[in-house]
Every structure is written in C-alpha cells, then in structure tokens.
Amino acid sequence: MKRIYFTIILLILLLNAAFTQEYPEDEFLKVVTIFTNDIHGGIDRREASFINPDFPPMLGGGAVAGRYILQKRAEADKNGWGFLLLDAGDIYQGTPIGTKSAGKAIVEYMNTVEYDALAVGNHDFDHGWENLRDLAQMANFPFLASNLCYEDSGELVDFVEPYIIKEIQGVKIGIIGTTLTSTPAMSFPEHVKGLDFRPEVEGIRKYIPELKEQGVNMIIVVTHAWLAYNPEEGYKEMMARRADGEVPADYGSSAQEIAHRVPGIDVMFSGHLHRGFYEPWEDPLNHTLIFQNYANGSNLGHVNFYIHRETGTLAGYDFVSDEGAIFTLFEDDFLPDANIAKQIDKWVQEAEAGFDEIIGVATGPISRSSSGESPMGNLVVDAMRASVNADVAFSNHGGVRAEISAGAITPRQIFSVMPFGNRIVIIKVTGEFLLNLVEDRVAGNSRGMLLSGAQIVIDRTKPNGSRVSTFSIDGKPIEKGREYSLAVSDYLAEGNSGYDRLLEVEPSKINYTGILLRQALIDYIRNNSPIIPFTDGRWKEIGG
Image (cartoon, rainbow, N blue to C red; front, side, top):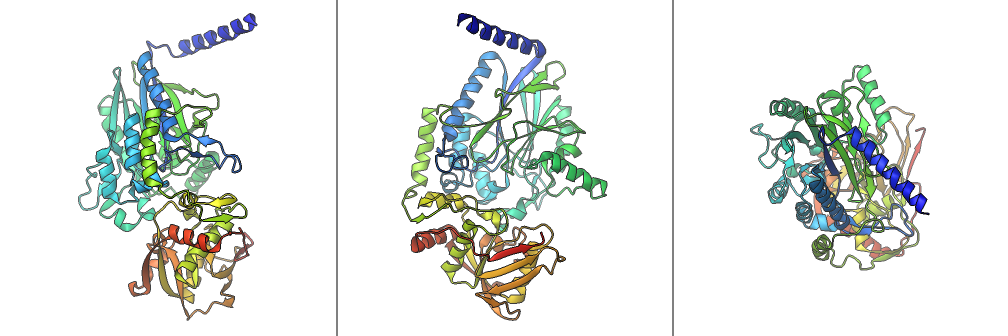
C-alpha cells in the first residue's frame, strides 16, 4: 500500500515539474480567470430538475460559487498569480430574487465576490435603461459596452465604460465589452428609448488600437454575443454565406463572426444562448479563443492563462477540471460560504413570500417544446385566452422558459415558466390580418407559434405567404372580413419576435388589460386543477 501512495505522489511531482517547465514563473504570468454569463438571477439554492426531474440534485447557487471564487482569489494572491472575474451579461431577470429586486440582489452578490467587469446583456434592460444605470452606479466594478451610445449625441452612455486595463505585475490586459446590437428588437421600446446600439464590431475595432497605444498586448472581449449551439456547423454556415457573397451584416453579429472579422482579439467570453462548452472554440483565421458557460448560475467557468512577461502576449492556457473549462455547482461537490448564504437568503425571503403555496396538481409532466405544439405551450395560451375571454391567443415559444413536473404546482414553478413581467393585451383584428400574421410566423425557417382557440395546418412545401392550408376558429373556417379578438403579451404587441405586423394596428383597437400573464396562469391552474397535460392537434405541419 505504501508503494502505491509513493507512486501517486511521484506522479504528481512529475506532472507539476513538467507543468513548471512549460510555463516557468520567471517568464510567464499565470492569470486565474473565472467567468460567468446569463446568471439570470440564479444565485439562490435550487433543484437541478433539468438533470433528473424525479430526484434532482441540489445546486448551491451564489453561496457555493462565491466560496469557490474567494478561495481561488486567495490562492492566486498567495502564489503571486493574477486573477480575473468576468461576466458576459443577463445577470438578474429570471428568478424572484433577481426580478423583484430589479437586479440589486445580484449586484450586491457580485460586489461581495469582487467581479472585475460585466458586459451588458439584452435582458439587463428589462426594467429600463435607467434601472441599468442605477445598477451600474451601485456596482463596485465597471459595466462594459463599447457600442452603446446616446441617440442624440452619438456619445458613449455615461454609465458604461468601453474597456478597462488590468495591470498585473507589469503586464497589461485589455478587456473590451459589448452589448447585443439586436437588443432593441428584444426589448420594450421605452426600455431602450434614446439609446443607439451600434454594431458590436464597431466598438471593438475602435478600441483595440487605443489599447495597443497604451502598451496592451493581451486583449480580451467580453460580449453578450453568442457562440453557436454547434460551433463547427455555425462556422460552416457563416463561411457559406460569405462564399455566396452574403457578407454577414454588422447587425447582430455572433461571437464567431466577431472573432473572424476582427483581428487582434486573443480571448472572448460570450453568452446569450445558454449553452456551455468544455473546450473553447478557436477561430481558424485569427485564432481567437471563445469560451462560453451554461446559464442560470448552475455553472462556473475557470481557465488559467499564461502570459509572456516580456512581450505581454498570450502563450497558452489550461484548466483545473479534467472535463475542461466549466463545471456544475452541485452542493454535494462544493461547500457554500456561510456569510454569502445569509446575504442571499435575506433577499430570497423578501422576494418569495407565498411562493410555496400549492395552487394545483399536475397529473403528469407538463413539457414544453421549441417548435410545434406542447402541453406547456397549450396551457399557457389557454390561460391567456380564458383570462380575457378572447377568440384566439398567440404566443412565442421563447416566452415559455421551463417545464413543470408531475405533482403539486406552486407559484415558484410558475415563475420559472414565466419569469418576465409580461401583461396581456387584447387586439381587435380581422380574419385576414390573423391569416397574414400566421403566414409571417411560418415564412422561411420560422418556428410558428403557440395558439389557443384555433386549429391550423401548415404546409411547408408551399412558398412563403401561402403555407396556411387550414385555419379555423372555434371549429369554424376563419372569415377574412370578420373581426376577432386576439390575446397576446405586451412584448409581442410591441412587435417583438417577428410580430412586427401588430404595429400596424390602430391604437383604438388595442386594449392593454394590465393582467400579468403569470397571474393568469396561476388563476387558470387554480380553477382547472388537476391539470392533465395534453396536445390536441391544434397546430399541425406537413412537408417540413
């Protein structure tokens, strides 16, 4: 047994020696870098039902993440290494603690663990840009958005910075941030009024030379732009567009497009798509490394960079985990920080009063889908229509954010399904308008919609504009000249998610009910429990 222990110790020493030889401390600066993105308020403890809905393991949230971060910072200080803690945006919207505190609870936590910088995400505008400004002023770290300007002056807004420079033992690291150019298309107009979201590449190209002039040779971009679900396929599609002469527009550039089009970026940290990667994507042309974590505070990313002290350039990187750059924050694997846990619990108690009351029962799992019909999608739009007695109700798949397991249903679960504070709007439109609206949502590769009160058949083999082969309301063929009442969320009524046709409706035909969609769902479940998950063929597609 002693011989085995000796062999293990010898192997560890040999590995450490090899490691030290590759990046000797006198030549290379080690920078421990921890990164997050799309926290969406997920700093409280919760069950990981996405792993096992029947016996979900517990995620430790901010208390576990915070302890790990503080330990790694202390370890870096002790060993003379650098340390960076970065976030790629969407910090608060999505949980009671995040939404009800309008982000204050999340910024307080981020102050406690001492983030170095945050790139602004699209959902960080969900309480209006003035609230984002207040959060930036509350933060002990800068909010970065090199492409966010005032519409009237063209100047960078005064509550963000375009970049920061971190100087560690004489080595300068430049960190540029960008928000999504496409944010206005995903926000209420009043939330971004007066702001100009410039192309992501514009800000990065502007500030790289400025950083170089200040002696920066290692450049990091933190952006809410995204790395594709399948980076290899995403890259092939991007290159195919370029080969066809369809050069990607500056509007809404992905992280891969930015990395490919802007030379001089060593590392990017991206987000938005809620998909994590254990290994970074490396752009074949510029060799930019792109890292991306999972969402909702379930994971942390950790990578160590090695920077040549004399030149200030990136020499290499490695991970602390055998799996790669990211790991899940299970309570079984990591201990929480007691003080951070108390801080978070204070906010949770305030935000979640009454959240565990049983409002109904589900006889089976209520699942969702990213396209077509699903039990959860049907439940949501049926609740919308019933709450305002509309003829039909439409919604977008992206507005349904979670599923519900079989058994007792509580407001806590409903908040996961409907984390946004959307309200129901009734719009009076003709049958012809409804038909055209559906055609809009099935043109090209569009995913369609969730609907209640209607039965629709889509023929994907037909050309755009003529794909609706069957459309009936309450069992009767739609009448083009008849007026119908349509229930949608205020988010869609503002023309978002491809519903821009709704902007053509006269104001006199629009009724902003003020009814929270989340509350309508709670009331519907109370009145119709037990909830039996079902699909009934209300939406069918052929040929696609």
